[in-house]
Length: 272
Image 1 (cartoon, one colour):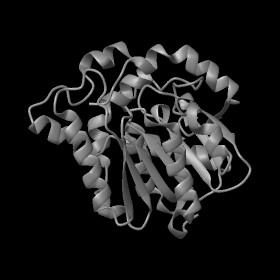
Image 2 (tube, rainbow, N blue to C red):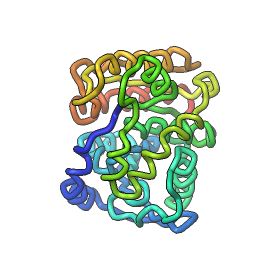
Image 3 (cartoon, rainbow, N blue to C red):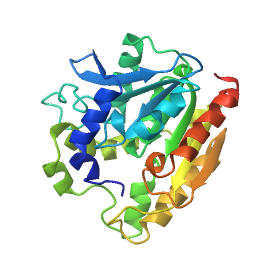
Image 4 (cartoon, rainbow, N blue to C red):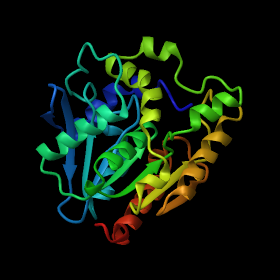
């Protein structure tokens, strides 16, 4: 399981950080408003996708450094960081919903393509779905301790609990976060097998330190699923962030930036 109340408690601080990053807004199909920031004048576009409960400010530790060699773009899904709340009448929000909203946002903001997509936690699942739906847009993918297809099933088969955010997390969360939590199962079902991503270069970066409250044994499964995913990719690489917790880009920002820099320097396998 990868879920923490910490992002929710930090919302005021994150909002202030977002303002300092130059927050902008754009409306997409269905009336949702997404917030975004951009920085950098050269190089490929690098898009940052946060996990459940986090807005774009989650990427503050690495955003400026990446903008020094690329066109950095971070955004918040609707309901986060000043965006309009998730539409009423939509009890869940899945990877499909998020990928399609992101595609519209990128079109409206004139984002340069192909892009390197960077996802953290559930954000990893969201960028993978985007890569499957819009492969021509994607030069490469970087996952920081991403939740991947197969983890929930393996975790439950091992008799561990909880393997997903508990019901209490939905009840205590704002509507947009609760909708994403309810959509986890469907989002997992929407994921392609790793072989289906073809030649898109991907780097899977896994944290070694489990989050507080994680069931015993879950970390081994979490790491095994990530390594298996990377090894099954046509163009994948697996990196272990030794000593880092779930927020690798906060615990080891130098490593996080270097992984992205390496992909840019390598030309994304000829795709960027």
